[in-house]
Length: 112
Length: 114
Image 1 (cartoon, rainbow over the protein chains, first blue to last red):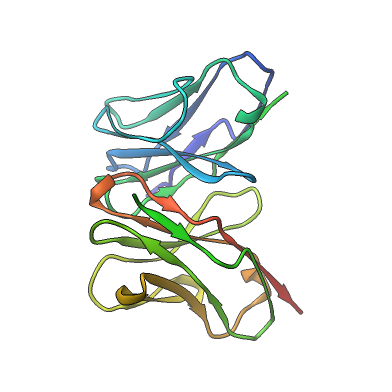
Image 2 (cartoon, rainbow over the protein chains, first blue to last red):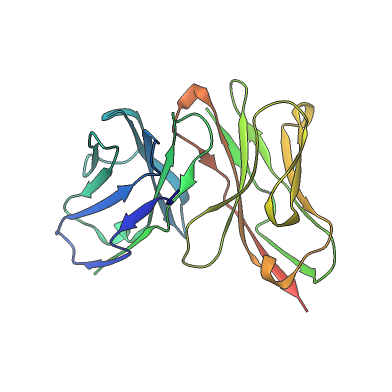
């Protein structure tokens, strides 16, 4: 089976812009979770989607949003980018959400 | 609330020496426990997991971990470290209480001396 894929792998944006990141889960997995990783804050949970519904949400501002499509692919969007949004964004998939999560390679976002 | 503590930020061991990375967790129900490894600029690779049953679990790359409920710990061990094991290691807790949400420790960076 192919693993979790994320596109793009690298992204450079400027403050105030918006960005959309994409994640394709492992075939058959219905849960997709997003995490932000920074040197200062570590790995922080953003949100989780299961069967096109947001089931769980972390403590991030409303500028961070996501969605999931009927094929389980997921996108996350960050509007009005700030310098502090520079991070590695990781996507993880699992079959139902409560058990093993498999991670993609991440999208590294740099905000200038 | 769920939480994970990895007390050691950085550990240095000699190649061939044994390794133990510590992890303590807090979770309001039956925990699912994981260890992941991350090389620079890469995603997380699952080393091993514990859901239930035998408290000593075997993983990939010769790693094992022991679940101790009384100590709320899930320490990772390897009998003989190889230079390629140098990386950052994360302990995580999840479960059906907050499906899809794993909580991670701050990570332990492993340096291997030749």
